[in-house]
Figure (cartoon, rainbow, N blue to C red):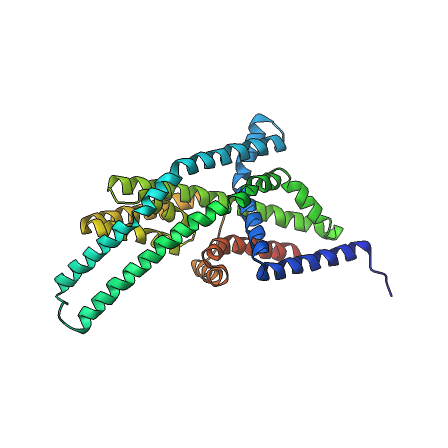
Length: 341
């Protein structure tokens, strides 16, 4: 019987470790949080990779120094923005009660216009809808506040993100080469080509989505401020983040802004709807094809299926990760099909 080589033993140990991490991820909240930090750091490093390449090529500084400068600059900017925005976010969140009162007035107005008062079942239905709206809005405000508290509690964990992002950014090639040592020598060139293609497609996709979400968020903020819609910061951030999800994101992201505008006046809601629709048309038909380019070439039906699967597995974050994972699978399949057949 042939004695297993040292390399096979190492690969077996790594496979068992990987399986153990998956099991712990399913069962342990701590492991899940660590995995989320690693994934988030990986996404940050991928987003910043084109900027690092540009900086290294133009200034001729080494990769480690360039990575450190970019990470320090980006996270300093994030901290400054957070310091400026967080007080405003708390102020806006504290005004949620005003929305609930406006909702009561709106329901009363609709009841009077529809003449459902005094008609038994319809009157009861109106009261039930009003009650459910109030409960839903109260739950939303409580969850939003809890999320801010949880965010504050997890600041220490989030402080690790810049460090991990730095190592992904500065030593990505070293990590890749270490992983390639586990692959048979005759397969390394193919695997390296696949990794390069994944790197190119995924990096371009993540960077383009970040730019698009930033543009949508800024435009939404200016529109809401111009129309004097309440909670412009909260609503524009929500719309920007939700816009990461293709197809469903733009629709879901616009709904809260339209509802808040409707509670102020129907005319304002109409203008809000028109402006947000215009933003999404510009983003979908002009900006997205130019910025995203060929980073993702998937049939719309396949994208929708991936989003549904992602939502079932991981909720909103599952939907965010569904497309990048789909891009990776697509690149791997196409490269294997090309090189093997």
